Length: 140
Image (cartoon, rainbow, N blue to C red; front, side, top):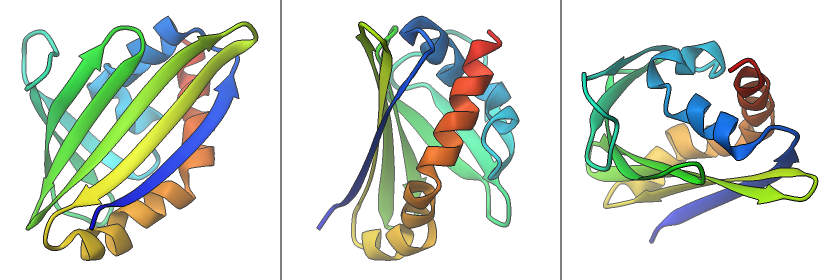
């Protein structure tokens, strides 16, 4: 059974800047306090592109871009042992800012374990991480 968390907030940053920040994978550690480093191959970032994350206290995680649609959507999938964790960022322009919706979902045989080890913590920290992300996006 998939486990899903959704966090939404409205920020005063245009979707274009938020999208530019989310696709700048090498700079994620500047706003994501849980990351030590990232690795991204050369070339245009597109659906199917691969990259990797090195979280604090954890092993390197292989990632794949699942969906990318400027300036409104970026989704990636972490390939974990016997599970997948999908993180989706939606950016919706409003008259008074941009709604950010972050959806975190774990699926697979060990989804319950990865939910406990990773997804719940990410969901619990979503408000602070999103604030840091939006602040970073403002600098672009």
